[in-house]
Image 1 (cartoon, rainbow, N blue to C red):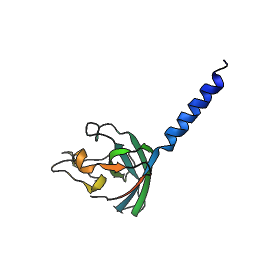
Image 2 (image 1 turned 30 degrees about the vertical axis):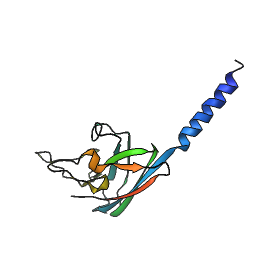
Image 3 (image 1 turned 90 degrees about the vertical axis):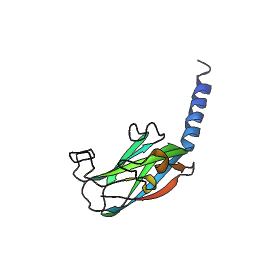
Length: 140
């Protein structure tokens, strides 16, 4: 019981230190064709997880022209993100019968793949501890 104050102090110090190293990724999304729905962002930290398991996800109300989305609390490191404009508000990326997206989308670095999404290496960017501002354009 007499060690409880010291334990609490150490836990608070570790929590504060970990929060101090968290970075923000600010993404300006250009070429938003309408103010309908939301822009959904998923962030990935490895090639194996890319487009499968995100480490962060957020969204923002769409604003025609340009919309800014901020992803907070990312440890400094390499990431790639994927964005889609959920114009109809159904919470998913709509595709046609053969799987081609029917809603606008983008990947970090404006990366595109051949006959499918880009590879993680083409889309990855480095987020320093100070944070990063990035710009991307939606593609129909």
